[in-house]
Image 1 (cartoon, rainbow, N blue to C red):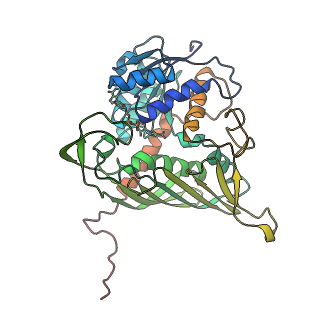
Image 2 (cartoon, helix red, strand yellow; image 1 turned 135 degrees about the horizontal axis):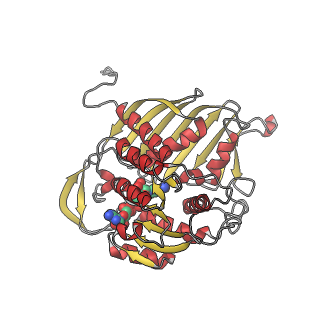
Image 3 (cartoon, rainbow, N blue to C red; image 1 turned 45 degrees about the horizontal axis):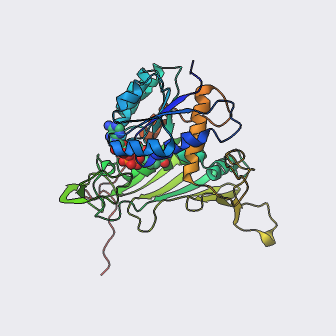
Length: 399
Ligand SMILES: NC(=O)c1ccc[n+]([C@@H]2O[C@H](COP(=O)([O-])OP(=O)(O)OC[C@H]3O[C@@H](n4cnc5c(N)ncnc54)[C@H](O)[C@@H]3O)[C@@H](O)[C@H]2O)c1
């Protein structure tokens, strides 16, 4: 039985580790929780200043530099794993073996084989929660869209268009980091495409086929950082030495879903001016809905509800009529607004509720779901057309 209150820890105090830490601190304040506030026990980061700073800012009792100190601690019951993808397997397997509940960041692991080992570890620990952090499922607007499509009033999806454009890799002077290492598919596809694949399946059902993949690396070498950088790795001194980038900056692909929907997707980490632009357009049998992360607290919809003379695409401001908002935000009426950090709070609340067996938020996807996501990513990677081998159809030159 999980002790009361739940002792939580975060491994990794970089960009997303801070979002998890903040989320646990805020989780007690959302919804009519019948579990006590979690006990904020420890934050670990191999770089001590990050661990110490995050522990101070978010009110955790201890800062650790070795993740094993967290995994072994008897007062820690639940752990967020928020480090680079190639550490997910080792830490998740150790944490599950030590009796902890685990919320591991996406993509679940660098390879399908790693993820299979993580799923096996979760199956060997059936009383513990093993979850993966597909945080965009906690977007009130996207969750509202999910209610509209499929069995909802707009009916089955015919076509989904998903673009996730970031610019964190645009500047060739941005330093080398774990995000630029690994083979094809470990770049923009794994980093942000994993979210897009998950969202598309949430709205369209299981992916049945993928095709037409293109992958391009525009910035092929990056300077080695001289210091420790966080997140997308700006603002750190650089060496003159450059290292090769061995994964993709741009990825495009198509999908087909069990119910006949098709998907077209474009991902980029070098999209100038687009810091974090996730856009979904979902064309259904009886209407269209769209979401744009730059305006996270609204969505647009077109259907046949209004009279013809006032019909058109209309904006809906997300409020208490939609998922997550009532009780999830201190001021919960439309136009107050919310953002991506709030998604982590809703996710943390759901994870804690799952552990305690309380609440009515949708549970976090389990590790098997994260494995499935990796299998789709692997299929997308396998379907790539090799530009060097000129496998696409050539276009004749017009003189
Ligand atoms: N759900 C989301 O929306 C979302 C957003 C961003 C990142 N992520 C995922 O979160 C993970 C981390 O991404 P990030 O952007 O926060 O990375 P990051 O590079 O900003 O942070 C990683 C942190 O891990 C620390 N670290 C490295 N080795 C360690 C070790 N052995 N023990 C403890 N700490 C160690 C680093 O010092 C760094 O502070 C990745 O899997 C990424 O895909 C998810």
